[in-house]
Length: 323
Image (cartoon, rainbow, N blue to C red; front, top):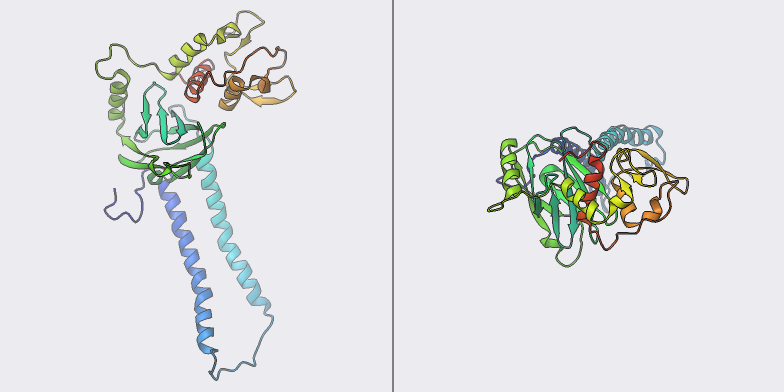
């Protein structure tokens, strides 16, 4: 941590560029403040009541001056806008990487619940490896929260009923603050946590220790294994197949995730996380063309964490989420 906390640590791939943009904006603001307020002070001093300044040479129109104060700020502002827009897109456009670490995040009053693909769960703590792409898939269980790590320069709203993603690459080993930056009720100020950036080998040791724990004879389930178990326990396999063959009256799930689906109402939608979640909670909204509306809603029977585990399993049937 910085000894004088004027500026947060730069601990992600976004931090330096965000800071440079911020410094540029401060500089531009200071520049325009000077060219506005310095003449005001001069005018107030020169033309204050009682001075002998000449007040007869009044000009009501000056085309060159008007063009200057229009074009110069525009030429300064447009590049800043383009830079900021590019940075925004880079930060919030989902990052697809083969070795990305995909972590599920659930915001709830008043804590952060996080789960690694290998099954390890954390409350108000997040352990990540140095130098690896980390992708967070986030949803809220109750009200709007906001996942904010100042050292990473990332802040993303976490909204009920909708998945949102945020990615980053940790670039500095250490311990960093995690906050909720959206007022979410009585104990909002207590919804804080810590992000630990570890060397890759230390992270692997941590994973192993957390997966087996102390005194356990069997390791914890991975998210894929938990989703597969739930798939059977909930009876999903009575109406769905997980391979290309089998009964034709069953809806196949193998290879479905990431593809376009034709629905009974004529819509074409992408089979992503949002599609799977809606199909579980409100199946009539995502009924596939050619199939009868017989799937029940699992709202109230399956919580957000279990939905994420089912999604991980379904993704694995299409070649994703191997864990």
